[in-house]
Image (cartoon, rainbow, N blue to C red; front, side, top):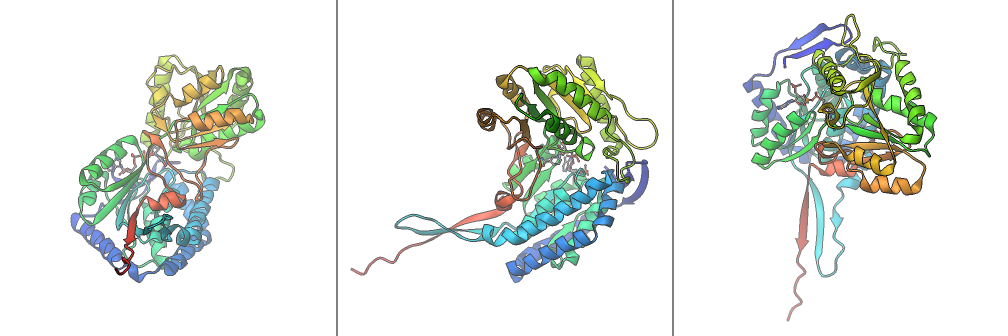
Length: 460
Ligand code: NAP
């Protein structure tokens, strides 16, 4: 893909960039490697100060940074501001908690003096998507830099201005040259970067195809990889739930970021006795969502990020209809400029159809009626993905069963699924492997180095 900023609200080309040449790329990798070689000169308290400064800069410049997100990938401006605030929060979380997470751990065992120290791995390549152009990057960079790793970012080709803005912010926060750099490169150049022996590890957030290609190469090279891929998360509503709260959250969970979130609820599994009530309220609420200019304060759904994105959604909805599904609302592209799609609700998508097993990355919900908890769990697990689940029930026994039996990386009861710096984030099955955020996320790119000190033998 060409490296271009195109405003999705108008389709107008804002800026285009020439990819780095091989020589420029080599210089940046050398700089990153050099920064890691000298990382001992940047002790933890100094890194902490830089990370707090970074949080401060984000907050101070939130208005401009949010506007940049909105113009480059179409996120509604209120959500873009919230994204910047969340980036500041993750910086502060790791500034506050890095010393605790990185502290050596004594092994509690008799007759052995052993401990584990947490050492950084080196230069980590981050291949990132456009949907949360700041948050996805910050949830990698904050733990990585606090741990003493060095980051190289290959951002999605449609958000180069966000990528460059992050690079500049990290430098202005005081991190030395080379600690974090944006590489304006195409996807085809990733292979050469990862193959470079100065790159220690890779993290990928994106589609299955990107994850598969990069992880295959990383496996061959025996380099550590973390994959955060797609999802088709279930949103399950049982009779004991507050239906008002569930419907409000369901609409929010499907439409956040104009439906382009890995952890968005995509399949809605409603227990039979409350299905009709839920369906009518949900459809009315989806219908009432304000779609429009993402720069306006009251817009809830903006354009999709790219022309390709809207084409894919359109084809998926058409495929669902051909397979026998029906449209309860929406189902069409919106006419005029920009990449807008109507908030859409589908019912009766056959479980044998191809689209049932795919991720729909836009404001399109699939509704399913389930007889009871057994069927809810069976349908929820009947997907190649396993990112998260949002379950609405006040029944403790049901909560225990869902928590134990759902095949995914996280379950949220009576609230929508969301990432948070304090809790691990990640999936299983084809949603990927490894975790981000919390101590678990930081430790993905650390060497748990065992240190054993033999006791001197008593003199004979
Ligand atoms: P994508 O096409 O896979 O792009 C993601 C990144 O990978 C981009 O930087 C892209 O570069 C690069 N890339 C793509 N193919 C590559 C290849 N073969 N080799 C090397 N790099 C490659 O994904 P997307 O459409 O931007 O993002 C949407 C997907 O990301 C959805 O499936 C969503 O669920 C997932 N996602 C997951 C999470 C999570 O945490 N689990 C979070 C957000 C999004 P170019 O832009 O240059 O092609």
